[in-house]
Image (cartoon, rainbow, N blue to C red; front, side, top):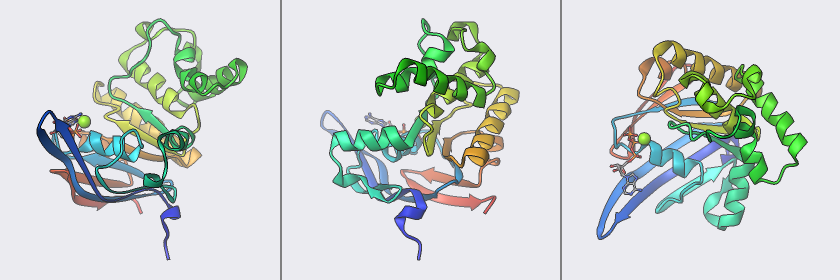
Length: 234
Ligand SMILES: Nc1ncnc2c1ncn2[C@@H]1O[C@H](COP(=O)(O)OP(=O)(O)OP(=O)(O)O)[C@@H](O)[C@H]1O
Ligand SMILES: [Mg+2]
């Protein structure tokens, strides 16, 4: 029998109700989704259907209003905030659409930042950052600042930063959203390669069908639930 431990992420009947003043808005409405370890899944769906909310909840950046979230068999509702951030640091890397790079820092220092926050010693984190930059083919630009890089290169730096702690799960919110088709496909090939060689579980939110088709599975959301899914590679 399969247990939660075979899955990187299990979301079961997850609700997320946002409160703005007196109004409440249910962004997720009983969403159930499991992602296998080593799987690469794309999340599609109209604007406002809950894709970013899903990534935040799956990444334990936010807690559900109701429902169960389990990461590698660990039920996150049982954890206090400090244990939860430990799990997040250990297992999960993020890539956001707006790259969130710091312009006065070099690519290398941008990538090593998550490790600095965790108190990893300088030499160790710089070596890890260089390795991560190699994964995205940018080690030769380690000393450049974000403003000296193209959009596609900046996105690759953001991916390297997401990977620097060698997370078992990488969550990416529209990582190719700002890029032309050629650069988007290049980013996708890098992510696919990371998924295959490191076995990293990857969840990508995208509006681009060409990007989604490169994944193992396409999950479509509508109104905060899974509307349909298509398995492309078992
Ligand atoms: N912090 C918040 N407070 C209140 N409402 C929110 C908040 N974040 C998101 N929402 C609402 O929840 C719904 C889902 O938002 P979400 O960002 O998950 O959508 P999305 O599918 O990622 O859309 P897009 O494709 O435009 O990025 C939207 O209607 C949005 O207005
Ligand atoms: Mg979004």
